[in-house]
Image (tube, rainbow, N blue to C red; front, top):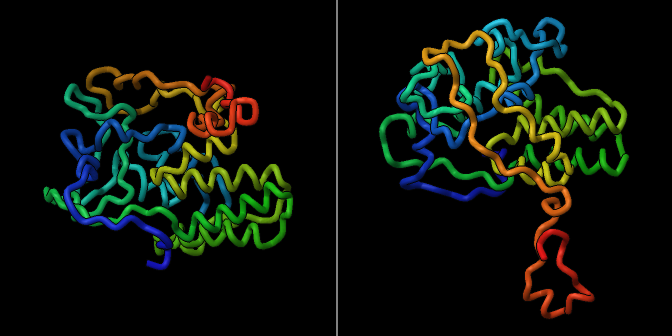
Length: 268
């Protein structure tokens, strides 16, 4: 796999089996994507290759002409896994909180009632290297053609997963620092979803306050047999005066002395 740079190889019994469709055709509620993540995948017009507003009129129309990474990452009404069509009907036995499930990295091997799983856990892959390069150049305000080339290489590979979309991905063009910063941050969110990097991105960009958005918003057009989706549980909020930094190990403070190496705020 030329995308793979460093991976944790695995073959054995694994909790990834919890990702497979269960009673209601969706996945474990501990891995429930939010609507804000789904909204991050752009909608585009194949005739013009331009980004367009998402059609939110029905639960199925909102997935038409979307970034193909959405269908490869998020399970939703109409998704097909191992030949089975998923649904997001709310029911008493539902094991889901948001109506969405994770299907990234799910293979037929997992979805055929076998306890074994042999998909490696990706630690570093080429797409992340390209996006990290683009982000570093943007933050240094050293913006040139190589920045958009790196982002577009990721997009062209992603849209190439669907043969009909390979020539229709919306290309990024040279722009100012602020616009390109927003583009590369969103690109990281959709390209690297469920790969364990979002938490670190939020910390690095110091955007935790904005990331604590509404989780229990209205869902239009959904089929709700019980009248409502289960509300998402409590969440730990970010403490800006503490959580953008990590605690310094006490043994290091003891070694250097608190005058030379004081503990970071909030961890005293």
